[in-house]
Image (cartoon, rainbow, N blue to C red; front, side):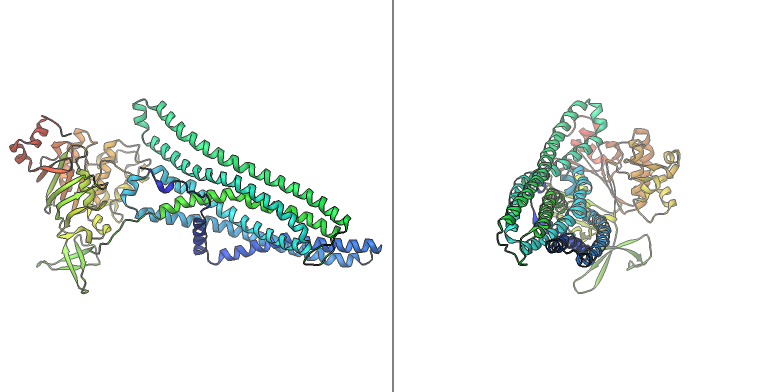
Length: 637
């Protein structure tokens, strides 16, 4: 699905985003940032004031030359030199300090932003990850965050320092000579016009470059995940062609962006050189003609003014060039920040539940009290408007009443679904791919919310139960197994982080995984990586089943849990699964009808509706759709 939020804006300069970046900086560093800014400003002012001292020294030399008397020159010049030297020492200390502070601020800022992004990502609904490429999301943490690094560590300090120097030098130039200052400003206006034209073009393509980088990373990640399929179907050449299209677009956007950017510096620099020559010529003519000088200081325009003015013009245009050179990096930073803020502004998963899951003690007469200890028994804690509390024992009674659901409005996936799963029952769903079986389990977990109808858990509307507590009461084994980097034991413990090693091993034995795990090079300490690529699909699935077992939930969802296991292994797993499902409410989704024969209720689904329900024997005796599926007469389509 296209992500319109990442599309380029009409204007490349999004100052709203820049203000937001600065807002985060002041929020994270309320004291360090002003201190750093003061140090930068002090260094900038010190860089501008030498012109004043040069003018004073040259003025002394002029006076001594005219008077042919050099006797008092040393006493008048040395204080200026000493004072300027002291300023430079302080400037060095100030520059060292702000550079060190900026190094800390930059990487601390990026660290806090990554933490903020990741925290927000954990709060996003499943729908977000279903509709956005994972490689593009990864690009937020790499390329986009890197543009922020350059913006904060380099661009903002340079912009502040150069702007301060420009303003300081401008003030001194006005102090020396207003007519000559106007000439410099005319050259600067020409610089700004060129910078706007060229910089605007580069900014547009820098925005496109960031989006192209995200698309490229998304494609590469997709190809890496599907490498076996690519090779099996000899799709290498087509993959190369598809990659070339995306990569060429990235090349085009990057080339155009940097082509504009690289041409801007030389143009601005040469305008500055031409301006320097013009000031030298006009200033010389000014002196020869003996024109009256207009200035704040009232100084006569002479060599003592022209020489520092020439230096200031070079300094002025150089710092204007520095500012224009940062435009592209600022635009890139704003483009990356805008994508990051798009992620941070995504609507978080809503949770208006107030019923929580607590450890409980249940007396012989059925009275339920909350316990601070792990009792192995659970209850729903239900606060009421009058301040009272009530407790409902967690039994695993799940019921759906006339449920309708659509991923996209107007295109129903489920229609009029009613399911009654009593505590300890095993309910199976069978049907063609796309019939809506997995969607039902997604609704029980509240990965998605229903459009119409009701779902009750132990008599409580699941909308009233906090999502974290609801999901803690459910165990799930998905068809697509996800294993994380770490040991086998760590992956089993993922089901319950406070589980002991003994409990994890017992869960593995229950699932039938202990046999192959003990034969691994390091047994339970064997390190897994890359989604457990060093294990077979069946072994990975067994670990996922053990992970669900250690969670020990009252309700278990098995979504094609044995689909990747061979027949012999399935018999081993089935015995463990039978022990795992004992005294639990279990929802089973399966294509192998042999795995659902012993279910209490089997529901046959087709196009989002339940068309048959009953036990295996009942459905076989009815000789309907299930009978035809079981005997192989036909398959649902």
